[in-house]
Image (cartoon, rainbow, N blue to C red; front, side, top):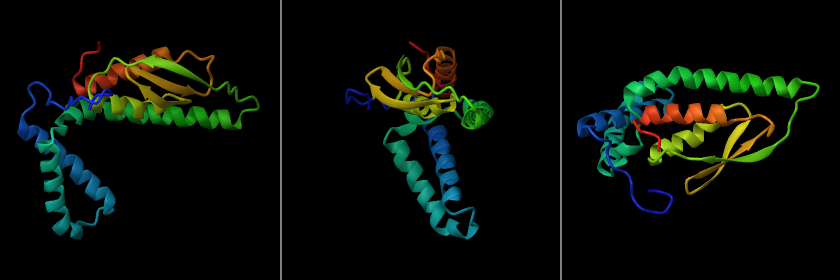
Length: 172
């Protein structure tokens, strides 16, 4: 659903039902592995559960919220690198004599259209050191920052572009 309540969960152009089902199956299987801590004996229950979850997600039109598998593989190292940079930055601030905290809230004009892409962007915003997605208001995202004197525009723009590639979207 879009912020105004209208549905927008349409499969991406050119995305086949089989590919969406396989992607949903892989995501559900990874989730099952995480839940069961890799216990292979759980697959007697897990396999039907994973297949049912993938079928339900595909039937409900949730393919629009899944990233493109190839783009996801390319995004993973960027994600891990950003996560490490963010953690390191906050660790340095926490032990510094003058941590330079000047908290504030900045407004970001969202250009992403899809529900999945928007959700991924909002979740990934916290990878930029000292930021957190605080509120979505239509096409405007309010971002809490630890230091409002730092211009977060380049980092947020680069992140939004990466998420757009991940979901095969053209930014408006």
